[in-house]
Picture 1 (tube, rainbow, N blue to C red):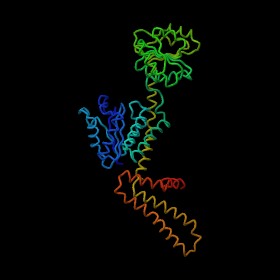
Picture 2 (picture 1 turned 45 degrees about the horizontal axis):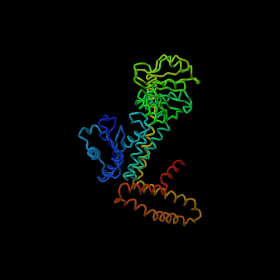
Picture 3 (picture 1 turned 45 degrees about the vertical axis):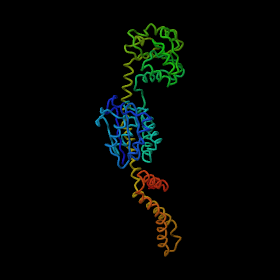
Picture 4 (picture 1 turned 180 degrees about the vertical axis):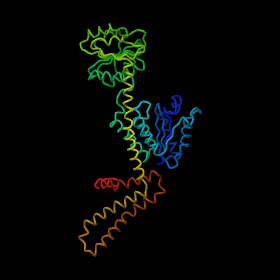
Length: 426
């Protein structure tokens, strides 16, 4: 398999080096035709914050030439060395792509975004006409691996960030978040992520408060929520079901007395509190108040650690899926050789001829039966002559054209389907 992969990732280099080899969509569209002009029949390039990977398919594809192109194209100042890059060829390159698509090579185990990023890179290659017959099959197989990994295993389940864990906990307490109201205290990075996750779970009403009013208003606008003044937010608490606090404060933003007043004035029962501030924003004694559920960073980190471990336990299942898909791709690739396809075509047609002759041979006199055998074989040979000659004499075609021609023959004659049916029938 004439496939080569080269790239940089969080496994091989820190962020300050990875970002030097990051490609925008416009840069990818500019780079792909240059690669093809250098003799790489097919190529796909995709880039994320944690990795940039280039796949090339050609009989003359070499890691060294791809490395030089990679570094020269981005005019790297020499800070990136070959040791910061990884490379794979043939079977290993396929296996690596499938691991990336499955999310088990990601910095965040089970990353669900990576598959969309690979699809984006493949789409750009199609746009640049650098993803041909082989790359189409390879990347469709990778997408199938990603889909199977998420549908047949639990690799993407369970929160593995504090902000998402907070929202997941809220779902455990309340069955339907669409009927609930939430208040996010703070507007920093963690607060922003938490607000986005709440909105993504269709929270009924979302309120934002922060000491800096402008930041609260900006976040509220971003997530479709409502900003409320920091110095009066306590007046709203009796109508709030979920309070998530993430601010820097030397004193508690909410103490036990505040919580007791909220519970007394509430028309519904449970109040869910999540404290992800450092130092803590909510008085730990509040958890002793009836109908109050209070979780802090330690609680969330335990939950995140357990979920990460559960995801790791899914890796053997993913590896089995990858092994199946790699084997299937290699069978497909092996079938795209002229000699085995010619042999399979001869075998198929001879099986049909022999089967039909056996069904009808008793209709002929014994003296004519040898002639029936001879005539039907000659007919078959004449029918197959032109296809076989064209398959054998495709040396002037490109590798992709040869494979496409062979694949078309196998599909037209149903070679692989018929073989499976005969195998199952036996």
